[in-house]
Length: 109
Image (cartoon, rainbow, N blue to C red; front, side):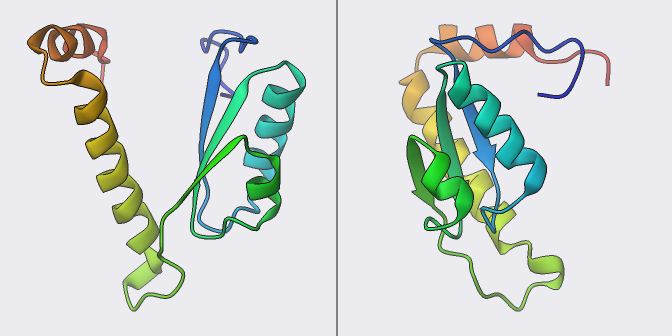
């Protein structure tokens, strides 16, 4: 989102939003646009009763509200683990899925 090379979001699409507070202004704007176009909004957050939590069609709570970690990175670490597990589950162990993801991964970085 927000990049000129990103394809337009459409009715059958989904927008995956990560916001620990659920109040990130740009994310709220993107979620509003996606909802207005009929796309499904999925939120990963530490605060499911936030503004984004009320906007989203599906909320995944990452229980990371208080942390002693510098910069409050517990939410980011939790979200990484959740998404890693989700992708493994969606792939179902199929080598074809991994090969497709590898082929579509950015190669100019």
